[in-house]
Length: 258
Image (cartoon, rainbow, N blue to C red; front, side, top):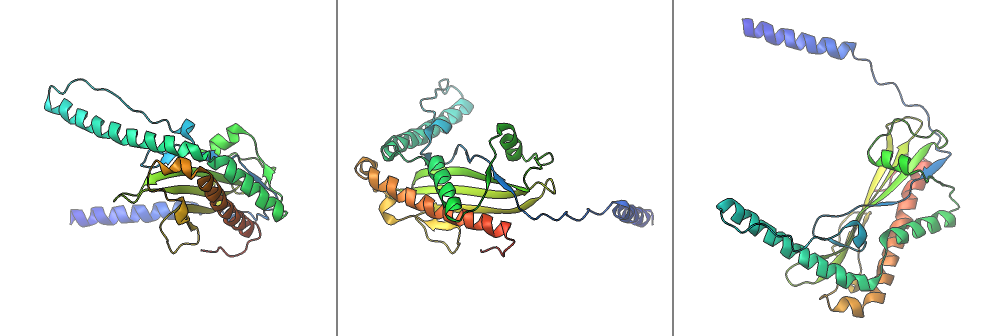
């Protein structure tokens, strides 16, 4: 009997708390007349992809540990040896990729700007490092009111990785875009994710890279450097076209294409 009374009390308390909680106020209308865009942020990638931009993803090699005198140290030494081997492979891949001289962030930025100009879409450039840092830390409460929304484009990965099974090396990238509401602070109007590699997927924001960009060995990167650079520039042009189309659809309040 006591247990039932306790359960009833807890249920009633919960209902009372829900009843006393103020409902979330409705969102203010946002005409999205003025939109600003932050500088593109390119992040390090700690996975199995060697990045074109090595300055943001230094690869550590030859990290030593004390001699394996105990089972614990032996396990640590084995783990470190595996990491060193993986990092050495990534460093060799990054060295080979350097011949292509492909720069993901400038390529994406130029293509976005060109597509905006082609469509005569006016988007203001927001150059405040403090604003960009706050947005990327999801501090969305005190955003500038001079614009109705902020576009935040980020490159999370852009490089090559080993496919495995002696299939060579293929390019891979991950890019995201968010349209952030400044009239209703803290609200994300819409967000998109773009990805590309050699595999085909049933997703309009997945881009299958041309087979010619997949390299059978590290030795072929130098020989095919111009092909790699031109091919990835074209892929990033297509990505930028789709990204701008997504932003324009959000601005015009047209249905999202999936």
